Image (tube, rainbow, N blue to C red; front, side):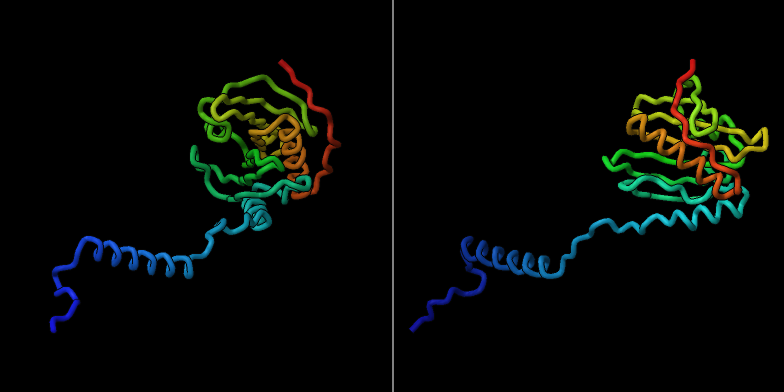
Length: 200
């Protein structure tokens, strides 16, 4: 009596479809059993180590202290891309997720400032903040403001730059933290926080 099983090579399209679905189901089961959520694989920013490296290399900057809710997203010390100046940089996210950054070098050059503020940034006067005079640089895309202060010529270095894509309160917070970080590294007294004033 002939068997009801089809000879190999005579499978119908329905047989092939069922086989493919079975194999696909097996693959999906294995995938979901072995997959792990990736999450954020970047190591946390080691601001203390970056600060120590910068200070040892002649760019004295302590660890900036920012209000609760701010998070350091990256930190580095090394030559800047524009002119190779030894540069300390820490990037932050404010409580709303807006980017901000603190950058320092022994003495700024126009190329260094352009690299920090952006090639398309435009000069927008000066302002007094945290006991320093800052040049204001604004950029339209992405919208950001950078303040640059370079008192190195009078022995009050290092040069500092703070950049914010948030509001003006963020900019003031970053500037005050940057100046305080320099004061903690040099032993100088940190100036009292003063209200920001715009100048032409």
